[in-house]
Length: 479
Ligand code: PFF
Image (cartoon, rainbow, N blue to C red; front, side, top):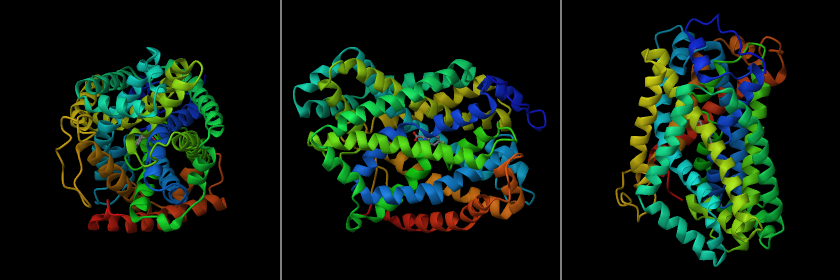
């Protein structure tokens, strides 16, 4: 394993953060961290269910367009800002801009967004943890008896209140713990081993799905578009999810890129991260939808989709409880590596800009997220203790869980990404941005680098702004 690269040219003190945060090898470490951040609950839990809610294939196409023309270009903008800045997102904006315009506020917006995202992300990661333990105890066996059991079990459990909060607490404890001590070599090694294992497991489950009765219907649902069904909400969901799944719009990628050597080609890295992320989301969809149709589950059944369909399959498989436990364990690892990347920008900001000791910062940040997260966990269904508390939101009132989810995906992440693009255009020189993307060993004059700049400078901001303006006019939840 190579040593972490030299940060001595940086003005801040990232050596400290570097050591506390961990010993990623330069290139591999960065790619792993970025993939670990991108691949998470967004791919395996959220993507299939919002695709289900939005009618399938037509949504998928819009989503892929959003990844290519909005999410990926903005991810590269964040990479470029982070590596050039070599410090927290707030610090990078401050350091790289010359005028008086307060671009650094975008860094703060990211910190705020991170708090909100992790508040509901930790709820779902808690469900995953519970399912993993439930499978280990052999609990999936009972789902094989009839199709409704898995759905009823999940619905009752998440509405129960106390237990989900305890699991959410455990998730935040682990996330805070890793941030507190830094990401040790073991975590990097574990991620290297576990991510391929997740691929393998998904591959195995996928074959099982393709052999099921619902295979044809599932594939049609995913790949035969019917644009007549495409709603405005679907476009907005696709935009929001392309940001969420690539971890873009809140400074996570700025923070990670601040630890990268100059000789890394950020463009190539970004392509690899976005490609892998999309592949995992597609595999998850191809695994889940055939089962959905085979067992007559409603594809638009929302956040519970993963928790109802897969345990059902595991219940019927030989060694199902064991495989179920392994699968949910891998998903949990994917969730944890993403959770770390959501909390890290918050902690980095506290350390770099507020001069708070990292250990205290990790404790304060994780505890705050846990406290804000409790209402999210207690509001997931109308039967939940806070299920009837609704907050006004454009297009219709929402409970806390949905509010945090929608507010961040549909408004805050796209807004943060938009401002980063504008920052690159107005506060920075085009040549510097292109050179930063290619790195010291890449070709800054390459046509693809120029194409990226144009997309990030014109197409993405215009696209995001148009969609956001529509959202502000209250169309978020309208069909
Ligand atoms: N990309 C993660 C996922 O798909 O699960 C979620 C996420 C991580 C969102 C980091 C935002 C972020 F900054």
